[in-house]
Image 1 (tube, rainbow, N blue to C red):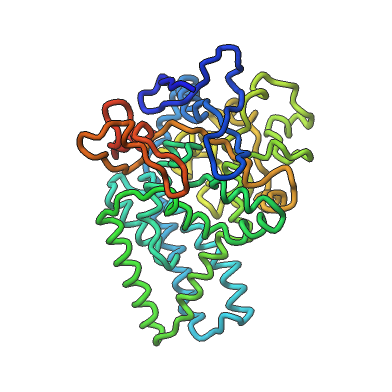
Image 2: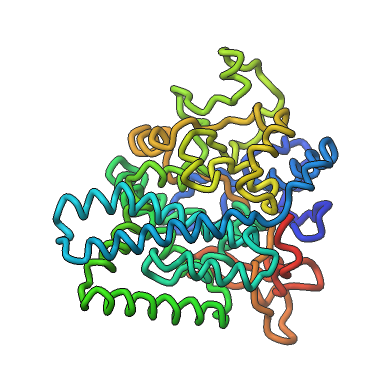
Length: 424
């Protein structure tokens, strides 16, 4: 394979030298410890090109970008509700049905909401000031129980800038995970404990620099945990409620379906279930389209009622196309650019997503699109002075290569994305 630089100066993709091979062909996977069944491609991730096409067709969408003042009030309300529930359950056993029911129905829903509030805030969409956003994220972190917000941000922004890039996008399962979890029991285990996979996996891929924001998040969160325990007379039940709420939020919970729905492709499912809005409106299968020969969709949207509880994260194609548009205006974006979004496959139920992911043999952890190169690390460190790009190639802890070329464009290897670059 040879390296080909695309129109964007910040993205390199790999391509075969043969001109007879169709652009949508699957490429050979890099060397791996296990037999690899991911869909490997050299094509550019789809969101940048669609964003440019939408802006060209509807330049008014750029007016939707900017902070949403409502976010901070929603965060304050949900944090207050969770702390209140934790205090009220201070004398209730973890095995009591009231404790378990509250943790699942209220706690898990609230903490999933706070996970996604931190997701929204990581894009600087609550305040114009970056520091104000960091502080609000630390506040939203309180009911989650463990320091999370500062570590999440660089990984998530890298996921946007390096969608599908192995060794950079920590949303991708590793080949080892997919190999061992590609069964009914394995997928059930993954769906039950997926919050732990998302928490632990990044540590096996790469580590962004530890900053004073990470330290502040750690100190403030541990201080809150201690204060809550002391306030409740030394009872650990409030903390157990918050931790259990976080676990259930990323387990077999309806709102947790978004973790799988967003980027695992369901195009191999023979019974369908991800028909586009255009197909649903016409009530018939769309006629074959030239785009059908392209690789599987990398991102799916969901337009159902659970978006009300999750900052419209279901509108995920819209979010990846325009990360600078806040949650309250994603439906407006969809309305303006409907001709771009309605032909795309989409989900109608997150419960169906979890159910099908577990039970259908045609979908599973291998159903992800991967690319070997492209993108940059957000918050990436510099390479050693005098070190060449070739010499600076390293292997991630998960056995996946991370090269200097993946960290920045030519002449800027390892610099990572700047604050001014991370939005659109």
